[in-house]
Image (cartoon, rainbow, N blue to C red; front, side, top):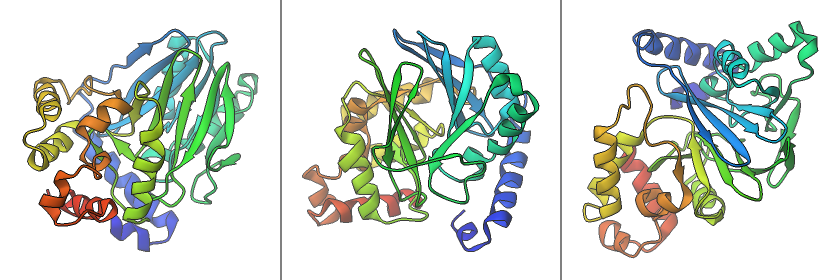
Length: 301
């Protein structure tokens, strides 16, 4: 994937699309059912896509206004919107990679073909590589999904314009982290530095309330937890979650996501880089250096 960063964007997107299309062919018979997390003020529907992606439909229960996060498979999104009987009018893009933003144009065109649906507002970082972007956003920009409040968190590193979306009401909180924060892991540093990932995970995401639900862009839980277990073999929280992941139906992508910020602080080694035991492992007390060394180890795992 890192080689693609040196190619023109149009070519890299086409190659990435081809890769994910081919990878997904063997998965067509696997379960593609959705999971719905119904809370008091919001409903989040997890929609599996491609090989191991997640799309998320976020609905305000009071108004039935909805937003879709990273709709790489527009037709499937529209099926779920119809099933949920909600009003979709916002598209939230976490970053420009095809498996997240590759459906933007398709969904945008479907709205143009059906003017009675209204306008589709497309949010994302200010990046020309994000297709059909209508609302460029930056750190602490806000907007609403019905009665739900959304705050944008700029988390460059995996890509330079990556945005996480923090959604809250008086009762609940959720954050959609794309490829910055995974369950027990983080994204590769394709366009950024260890300092940037440290700021994203420690300076921003870890400061959210512990009960904030974490909806990430991919199902990588099992391999992330296996890696974490090699780093912290005595961490009981990691061991318990690893057992859950090993017993879960990950092929059907029915398990484990969402996590919470509080849980990630206990099981995610990339969010634990300030823990003193890393001084013994990596002979440094610099948490940014620990972040760099951890990511290098995970890349080779």
